[in-house]
Image 1 (cartoon, rainbow, N blue to C red):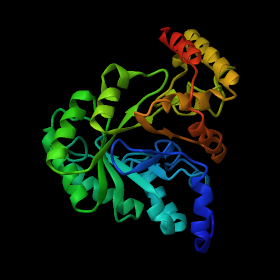
Image 2: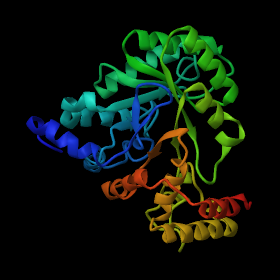
Image 3: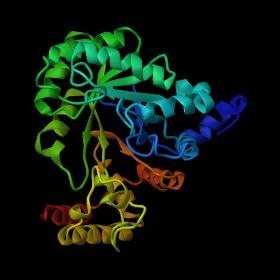
Length: 337
């Protein structure tokens, strides 16, 4: 990164490398590609590599770092590592960053460390700010729907957190259309700036199309940021010739398993890879471009295990156009079960 005295000169070059999209109808803009801390920022990961990834991302124009209270492992460790990196490298650049976090899934033992209660959300934002050495986050998300807690209670907690200055905007994650509609209504009544729903979306996972969230968010002026755009690594070329020893399937069995790599799935991946090659992209790049092709999605969250992966993927923001033939081929391939 540039030395502090040269920050403004460096900023111009940095921002020319990235496309920034408006988040719904708000005044906020997200980089087309954002860095997620879900994987590779926990206690088992290399700290110097984490710092290098953050520096590489920021210097490439990625201004958004996305976290949650229980990212790790262990829970809280991604935020703690972010806090250390912030103090060492990023404090002078705070106003050039969008730093977000979430609460909703299990975080600590007992009845108050999970869900959507006011007590949990209020406690969690304070803990997160302490771990990250921040005075505020740009967006605080309720991480999941909680049918056991009145939605009004959860939304009032978000509104009060924003009113307190601990967050600038409110967001939700993993909310379906019904919950999103009600959240929009409640937060509008509370005069709280609600800007984004974070949902899983990829060529292999079309749930936000099927449940109506994608269309509704556009209509309501709420942005969508997509996580798992590479389907946990399936939409890459890494598994075309077997399972690499350093791959997620081989090293982390929480989310992707060897059983997911069926003959049919591998066939789809190979055919999609052919389209990507014809477009002059890697499969991962094409998968990210595909998610960004419509203006409903303002950013894609990428995970990375090394800085080079970040640099490989930032180019997708300038290459989101697909021909009708390409889209039709992708649809035929992905429609096969």
